[in-house]
Image (cartoon, rainbow, N blue to C red; front, side):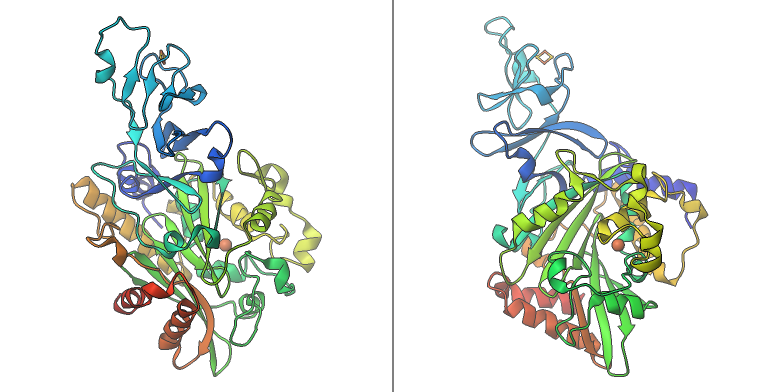
Amino acid sequence: MMSAEDNRLVTEIGPNTGCGDLMRRYWQPAALTEELGGERPVVRVRLLGEDLVLFRNDDGTYGLIGRNCPHRGADLCFGRLEDGGLRCPFHGWLFDTNGQCREQPAEPPGSNFSRKINHTAYPCIERNGIVFAYMGPGNPPPLPAFDCFEAPDAFTFAFKGFVDCNWLQLNEVGIDPAHASFLHRFFDDEPEEEGYGQQFRFSTEENEMAITKVLREYDCPEIDIEQTETGIRLYALRQINEEEMHVRITNQIFPNAIIIPISNEIMLTQWHVPIDDTTSWWYAIFSCFTEPLDKERMRNDRLELYTLPDYRPRKNKSNDYGFDAEEQRNCTYTGMGDDINVHDQWAVESLGVIQDRTQEHLGATDKAIIANRKLLISAIADVSAGKEPQISLRPEDPSSCRGPVAIDTIAPANTWQTAWKQTAKERRQRSDWAQDILSEEFTTALES
Ligand code: FES
Ligand SMILES: [Fe+2]
């Protein structure tokens, strides 16, 4: 349970709010690269309560600038992409990717007025299918050397989806390991090949037990957490029998991302990005250690669930998320189909657009949620006081921000604490792109 004041503090993300200032100190996804794939790479962006326009120049440079022209406020999303920038169609003012006004063709010859017009603009960087923006003060930090950024593009796949609620409830479902045994319960285990790139649709290498079976039959996991240099590591432990322990390790990457295992080789790094206080995007990069991903198949699978160009879920509040009572009796816990994104969508949206956390009753399974809220509140206080937050993701050496390790494995019950590290190490050794960073990554894992 939280006070109404703290709940406001961690959910309001607009300019000059505590949480908004905190979020702006980290790279945030602004768009998928594919959204800029057409002939005119210009896309409207609403991010952290600000209306912006993202464009790409002929030379490949991205500009993310205020949506309303600083002259008289026209909508720059309709701008002409030309002459190295974006030109307002109202009176022809031209803005470069830094927001500097370069031309004002109707002003008198010799006028230097344009030099004084420096429009809102945020630095961008593109990596593995997502354009990230830095909206905070000072110089942006380098991107951390997380696996999702280190993996070659062919080994990754990116997508996003709209969610009709505040960012924090979306984030909190990602650090709640107990819900998977209920919300995502399937009464039967489906053949693995039908679940390519889908969460909870694989078998562990060790005893070939389907994860759906593990989650269904062992529904009271022991949950442990520990703070790391990138956020919080979560352990969900399910004792299978006297000899075997199911160990699932996921991470909160502070402040608004998670990394979780999708299969033995595929990880999912997912950001929960505020559009404004009451709506959000999830942005995901799937990354594989061992082989290129079938991007086309993964994209087509998602297009069965999401519409373009708005990335809205086809199953949503307006159609009861496809709820089917017979399915709920016989096949799935929710009666909302096989896709776990739909389950999560229902779960987070049903809490209301901004969950009233003064009314909740958190239990032992909510450890990570409680710890993360404490971290958020203290980081907001640090930033408000002009200090660096404790987890800043601004190490002197960016390459020290490795991993983080996410793994789902069956380990010997009495040595699981070391066995999962060995399994993660072997996985990395099988990977062409990840084996070089083996030692650093494990230094991080072992020390933190
Ligand atoms: S409103 Fe944009 S140039 Fe005048
Ligand atoms: Fe979930």
